[in-house]
Length: 354
Image 1 (cartoon, helix red, strand yellow):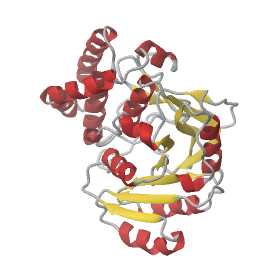
Image 2 (cartoon, helix red, strand yellow):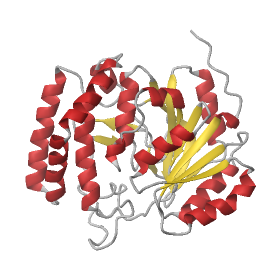
Image 3 (cartoon, helix red, strand yellow):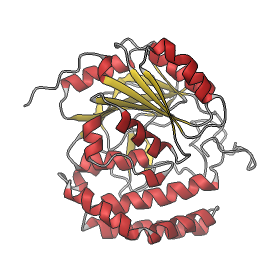
Image 4 (tube, rainbow, N blue to C red):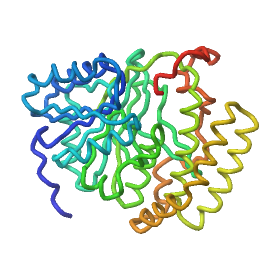
């Protein structure tokens, strides 16, 4: 086996943080990065046209980073395009994608570098994402993927104290994910048409198809500062979820199972459309995919040309389910065990992801 490339310290890592109107949260995230036990990190904040004081506060931090903190402003096209922009701007072999509302534990980067040093086939690594409002509970320990393209977080709501081992995953939530930059670029990076949602599961699927290893490790822990209220998903988010998971299925699924998976997805969509509002964004998602089928077909050809393993191998990494174990039910996130499942954010309250 080829020896792992030398990854001596944190100077081989650039952190890419997409953000939008989260100045206070971003300052907390940058502070946690400065407290990392690895050597000096580089950081790129990619601002999706914030209207708060994000730019001023980042620039005020720059002297403390001694030239290693950079600010890029772009049109409000979502986190997928922001991550691609940061990936392109980075010059280090490893890139850490981190959300602006996430706080890494001090040894996160140092420990992650150790995993990459010991495994030359590791393309992406993550760990335990913990709810900051209830640090005894897990938000995610990697992600699973259903056979018709629906994705969900693994161990969502489980107790943090549960024993876990490092394990392969189909995908990792981009709340905190360290990747080999050239490998991610080779599979096409993030699909920028996604805007929000499923861009991480889509990338993980493609990395696995190309024969790379995606894994999570229990010694990598990060706090996710989200609202405890499960809330209601904004119709715009419903639209993006529906369009993105179909686009991902059309791009990545292999023949001959592709036909059955697509048929099952369309049947599921019809039932979901009849059973649960909002309906207009779900119809719009189908129309969006119909209008862009040629573009998706071109992407499909590229992805299938890079395929090294069958879908059966990819789905064997997960639980092999078709649907999530707990339906999302038009909420922003699933309620924790024992929580009042009827508790939702009022419909007129703004979904913080929009």
